[in-house]
Length: 214
Image (cartoon, rainbow, N blue to C red; front, side, top):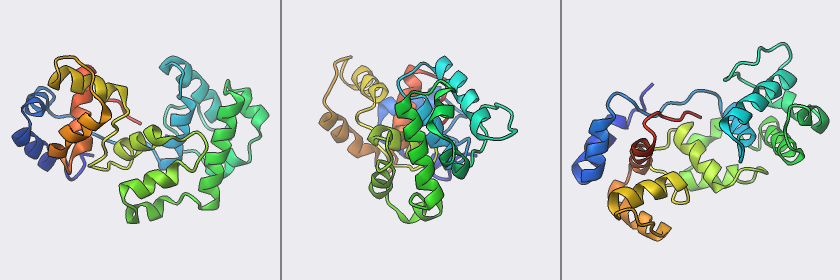
């Protein structure tokens, strides 16, 4: 389902920024959308850190089979945090996970199972407060939290200045290919508020036209 703010965002950004106007026109009828529940989405993000997409998919399917009793190894199941928290490190390691990632997943599951991370409360939190809550989990840094806010929570005004894709796209479209510092990206993005997530998403599309879903 299209985010409620999407059409207003594209109109606003198209009026303010010539680059974005062109990119929005070049990519019609696509938009951000979520595909799973919060716990499963974050677990998949941890599994996929610093490895190839192919390797991540293979490990993810084995992980799902190990922690979801009787579940088919489908790409986007809904996992039970309590079941993951109750799974020892050894069975997780047998899925192909490193010991560190196994511990990260158990810590994430413990946060959800205990209520320390409670998605029902997240609407009350602004972006920075939610990021702060997420990075309390081992293995979740600011970049992962920002991706989660954009792709799962569908927050409209997140600017992931440390994202390599955003840096590349800004260099390409605004600086003749020359890389710029995060401060320069923040300055440029002042004109994108309150829709910096949407601007970022279209700049990503200029590098890869197929949308990524988390």
